[in-house]
Structure formats: C-alpha cells, structure tokens
Length: 64
Image (tube, rainbow, N blue to C red; front, side, top):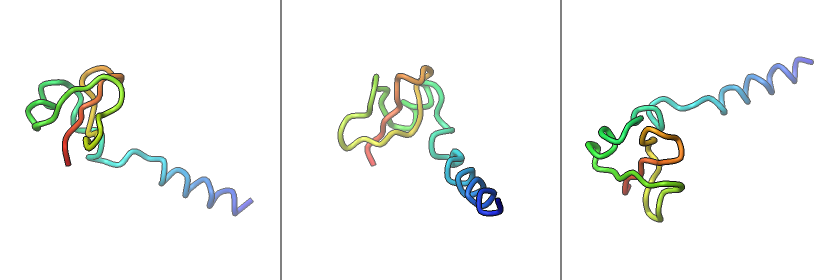
C-alpha cells in the first residue's frame, strides 16, 4: 500500500501543469504581442506551442 501512495505522489507531480509553460498566453492579443502566431489545430513545423488564442483548438505558436 505504501508503494501506491508513492506512485500516486509521483504521478501527481509529473502530471501537474508547469507554471509559465502554457498558462501565460490565453488570448490572441497577448499571443501576437509576444511575437507569435495563432494557428488552428497543431503548430506548424519548427514552431513551439506556447499558449492558446482564446479557444483551445487555436494554438499560439512561436519560433524557438
């Protein structure tokens, strides 16, 4: 039983959202202001997903 508690604690830590990774950009204005683009679906090649543009289906993508 103690192993299950340890397993659940590790899963909880690894599945938590990392602060600052996807949480900062939530609308198109902040996306474009940060020098990124709003793209429906997945980000194009060589672009990194940094947030959403209002709706979760439209991603905010930026070149690294």
